[in-house]
Length: 196
Image (tube, rainbow, N blue to C red):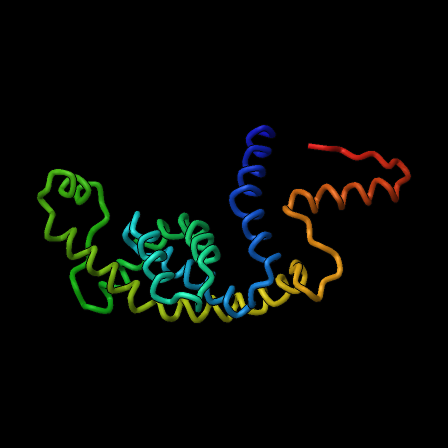
């Protein structure tokens, strides 16, 4: 159990924390980062799996300098588990909006899908999920932007290595943790540096 937690922490640090730290340390505008992260998550919860990276790429190409491409892609990556959990709510929301038939999520319906007997119903349910996402997406984007903006203002101010900062920022979050632990050990009088 402890070995898997260490591996998970290393993966999380390498794939999410270190890229986020590098994005923040470059001093990008908080408004741009908040918009980009909100856009990445909003596109990342698109109810058709495997399409989100393409959608994010198209949004980055269309918006150009209005969004921060690495932030959009990182947020899209973070949204992947959320995407799978929102497919059914988007489906039900689309059914509610359109007044369409309720697609049953039962084992019998699943058997019909696998045998090809329910192809019309499956196509209709995909359209309902898309409709639910299309209606919800602007609200998701706006809500996430409102939530992320103050967060990114604080984070950019804290981690930015811009011209106003006299101390150059370390290259990774791991290095920050090592320096912090080294300072704590110096204060304890031990002065031992652990190098990874």
